[in-house]
Image (cartoon, rainbow, N blue to C red; front, side, top):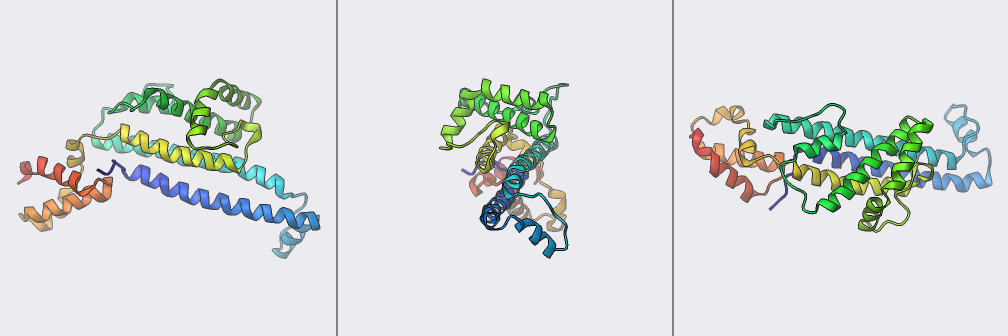
Length: 261
């Protein structure tokens, strides 16, 4: 049976694909430009002049380092939007959403989970890793001494959790602490967040009744009393909107549709 995958997680997956492709293209391009720099120290200045731009003091290695850091910030922005979108979806389903003041985003999600993680220990490792990712982003976007210190201290205190995720993805060169970021960190966090958001989404899966109630039957009034047509359109809607397979969609319709007939 296909897992519950609403628009929030599908949108985030598209974002990850675009970010990964762009980060890889920039990385490869800058590795190539480093070769030209070895032959010509004025490489960037001359290239900039061709584009009618004045540019001095640029080195490919420095751009690589900055790009890796900014990609982490962009990635977290996408993750943050996912968190907002999944919360909005849950509220539309009618969740009694609890959001205590001054509570971190991931803890708010856990408070509202409709299911229990299959392995609580492993989920804690993953949550710890996601929290480190948040602090890592903060140390880049708000580069104060305190922010960087907090990220490094958390990184060191959660090595068991981070090592678990590292082994899970068979990564050797990531994740790293804030002073040692590389392109491998971008790949690592993209892989991790793709799986982590899928897991969060499943733990916030609404009831079948909620799914049924979300179907916009009023949009299909043109079918009038053609209940067979309405059932068919409703099943298609469930499949396209939530990625359930045909059997699951049919089960939901057969269970709850009679009240509308």
